[in-house]
Amino acid sequence: MYFCVGVKKILPGFLTVMIIFTAAVCFAVNKLSYHSESVNAEEESIFVPVIMYHRLIKDPAKAGDYAVSPDVFKEDMQYLTDNGYTSVLVRDLLDYTEAGAPLPEKPVVITFDDGYYNVMEYALPYMKENNIKAVMNIVGAYTERSTQEDEHNPAYSYLTWDEISELDQSGLFEIGNHTSDMHSMTGRKGCKRLYNENAEEYREALIGDIGMLQDILREKSGVTPVTFAYPYGFISSESKAILEEIGFKALLTCYEKPNYISRSDTGECLMLNRYNRPSGISTEEFMSRLLSENQ
Image (tube, rainbow, N blue to C red; front, side):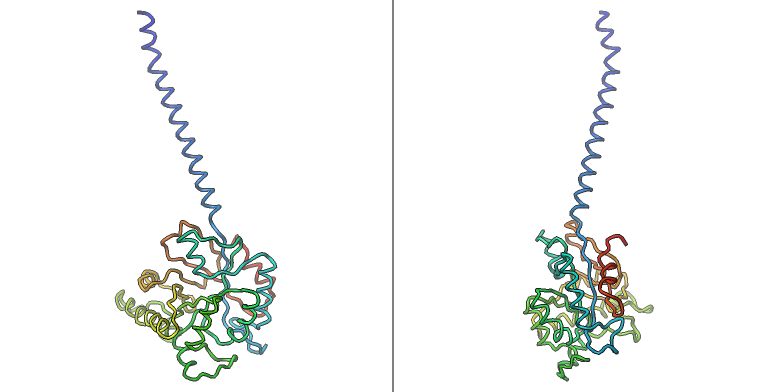
């Protein structure tokens, strides 16, 4: 009898200790699991620097914030190669986030905005020799005008519809949409929403311009871009959903910040920051900013 009474007194305390011990073990296991998942997430996050070029021009007098010489472009590419970077296309990043396709150890994305013919004239031969890939974001109005004039002058001409197709078929270029006729600061700032424009009017404006260029590119050049570049970097919060509706999977900004992508980005429209490449600074100085992961 005394034994039974002793057990009854001890048992509640013992159960309490066991419950506390079990809870502590579960907490520790969950914390370790969470930490492991966090570490894995960090390990899967890939640093992807993106460069924004515009014109390549041989005349030093015309160099500036949005124009560099072909030699500067080649020096930049050689620097990246020497430091272990491999150029990839935006669609390669999408293949990684959507399907787990492999990426090189140190990927970098090269972009050209506006669709200048001089890129084809000066950069393409070098890119073919060195297997360098890039994204060409074209403006429909510029391309149409250049197609009509057909001067092929590297000092000022833009690509034609046929040349866009040729770049696409080279396997070195991905064609991006940079609006049909919104690359302007007159009235609307790029494709930014007007202050007196309601949501539906804004949606119709973007679809009417950007969606139209999608159709024209498909018809005249045989390409359907999945990448869109914001003119001048002007962004309205409503634009992302509209651009996704049109069919874009990646949006290029002008924010000079590093990018990190991971498999957890699956199903999301990638927003990629870019560093503009101006003239007047050395390759080493520019690359020190571009390749810094801690900004």
